[in-house]
Image 1 (tube, helix red, strand yellow):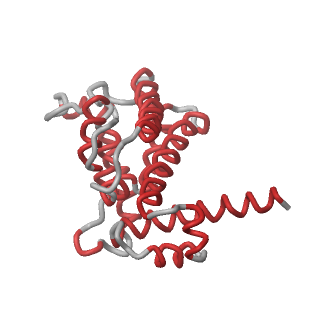
Image 2: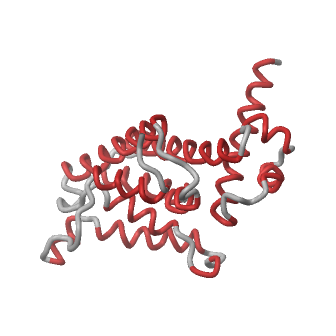
Length: 218
């Protein structure tokens, strides 16, 4: 019975975090928590048992998003022998997580504390491994740097003006395939020149995401 209760509690927490992420993206982090509880299918008392305050819930959403993204990045190579296909799998999974919409929605409401910084670093390491494997296999153009992958995904997860289209998610995955084709070495050869503009390294990506969420690492 105790095991079942723990499983139920874990499930409730996951439902609350998922609902909060969706609502914070669509309506903002100041949306009444009763709406979050209603979307999650739990009572408001259950929400507060898991998250004592709005700030705790907001931070929980950020941590859960980074944790899930890191898990996706680490699992991708195990499911695909081809390095580029592993990168493709990760990109589509990250797009479904809407990482580029969730964290900006929390801008100014969280700080990158030690735990969040460690989660981000672990995720970045896993993504960097995907990039390096694909480049070593000759399947990813050599002028691609770390920031090109997450920023590409983040841009595609932003809602279109006016709330987007009913087909917004499907359209984002369609456009991701166009971007992914541009990461192939053949695209570099066809262009005959290196990628223009700034190359966002992992270090610069950390600085940029600190600014996005509105707080410096500490």
